[in-house]
Each structure stands twice: as structure tokens, then as C-alpha cells.
Image (cartoon, rainbow, N blue to C red; front, side):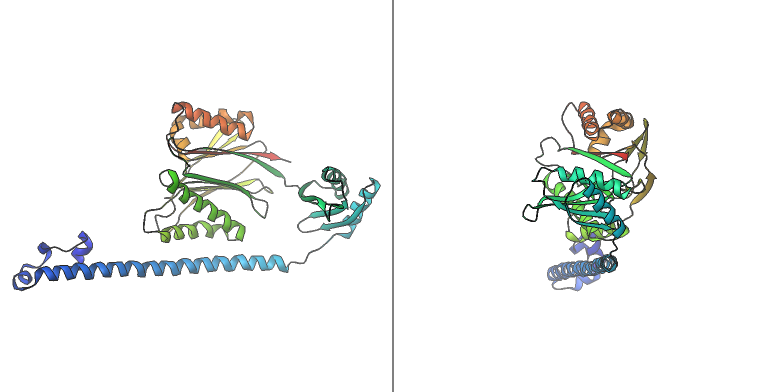
Length: 378
């Protein structure tokens, strides 16, 4: 009877063995009791499975957290070394320029220069003047990473400079919700990680509107949070996939399109989970990066497709949700190649969106999001 219950969802009189039914004096009550017991057993089995899955997820998360804490401990335990010779050169160079310096600290690994000087009354001249002199004294390119023109009750300016990365990434995002929808079901993020890498994310939730937006936003925020927490890159997407499987009995899934660019090496790594194709444009040639795997939240195991490539000065990267690529269809490569010729990420993204809307007579039939990035050598 239980086998028939599993196949059909209930037990009826026709499912009872005829010999048993003929002799049973209370057949309706037997059928009612069977449905009740089988139903309760099925519910209990589901929750037991959920508990087992939750324990497995918790175990994976604890392993990931332990790894993040271990790496943090190594960073904390690392001895901070300062270059006294470089500090003296910077101080002497600034003194020659008539800059009153209160403090100079030059860290070796990673290389950084912190200067506290006499206040410039909030005019912002401290950064430019310090950068030019300090670069010459250190013999390497620097960028201002932090500063405060009103430090120490406004008496001083504090400026922090770090070594300039070989590659600079300029990005722009344009987005448009589906016609009639108040919000977009797509979510995106462009962030600089603690190690200087650039993280670009696109996520397309199931359907459109508020529910789809909640799904995609949750995925994007979790990915970004786990990166910032120091989790291993290989553990992030599987962890989120399991969380989505456990978060609800409803079908909840979302695509993930991830690109991580290393500004030291210029290498870009793409990860596709049921995401639309992306494009790399170099010298007028358009290369396609295709996606694979099912969306997050469907299967127990997450099997993303990864591919990497080395970027050159002037390369343009275009990432878009299927609300754009499906509409452009076979003309997508040609349209993308023409749109990015301007070399400006913002203008290029707007050009692609404009060409997409031309196909739909100005009415977005789906949520549309486009990220464009331009790679520049310093």
C-alpha cells in the first residue's frame, strides 16, 4: 500500500487487495488510517532529510569558515616590515618641496606609503602634491587608496598610497526591468576585493518581479559576502547552492554569471551557471564565452563551468542577462562589436541596450542588465 501511496499520493479502495477487502469489516477506516499514517511518515521523512542536508551544509560552511580563519591568522601573524631608507628618502624629498611632514611610514609587503602632513585646509592639494613627490622618491607608480584632509581636528592631512596595479578596470552597468514590472529580477555587483581583484557578478532569478529580484539579490550578496569573508573561491558557489536548496520547499533557482579579473596578471576567470554568453572584444574581434550547468538551487551538486583567459590593454568585456542576448540572437556578436568601438564602458552599455530595444520596439520583454568593462594598462 505504501508503494502505491508513493506513486499516486493517496490510497483508494481500488488499491486494496480484493481478498483483504472482502474480509475487512472497516475498509473505509483502514483506507483513512493508511492515508493518515503514510502522509505523516512522508512528512517526517522529508524533515529528517532536511535535517541531514542541513548538517551537511553546516559542516561544509564550518570547513570553509575554518579555512578563512586560518588564512586570516596567517595575515595577522605576519610581521609588518618597514623600509627606513625609503621613509627617509620620502621625508627628504617632501622637505625639499617645502612640505611639513609629521609622519612617514613605508610598508614593504604589501608596499604602501602613509604620510601625515600639515593640513591644507580641505583644499585637496595634499593628495596630488604628495603623490608626485612620493612616486619619484620611491621609484614606482602609486595611487591614493585613502585620505583625510581634516585629520587630527583639521590640523593635518593624512594620505595613504599603494603601489599601482599593472591593469586598471573601468566598468559601467545599465539595467532595465521587464515592461510592467516595478523591479528587475536581475541583480548585479561590481566590487574590488581585498587582494585587488575585480569581481563582476550577474544573476537572473526565476521569472521576474519582486520574487525573482529577491532570489537574484540573495545570491549576489552571499557571493560577495563569502569573498570578503575569505572563503576559498571553489567553495563559494556550492555552499550557496545548498543554502538555496534548503531555504524553501518551493522551487527557487537563479543563474550566476561571474568574472574575476586579476589586476596584477591581467587574467580573467569566467564562471557560468546557466548564464547567458559573455563577450571579449579585442581589436574588433569578438570572442564568445559560453555558459553551462543548471541554475543554482536545482541539483544537490553544483557543477559550474569555468574558463580563463589573459586580457590585453584595450580589451572590452561584455556580460549580459538572457533578456539581452536572447533578443539579439545571432546578431549579438556583431552588435556588441560595434557598440564597444567607442571604448567607453558607459556609452558601450547604453549602445547595446539601445540596439536591444530597437528589436522589441522599445518595450523590454524581459529584465535586461548589461555590464561592460574596459581593461587598461597603467
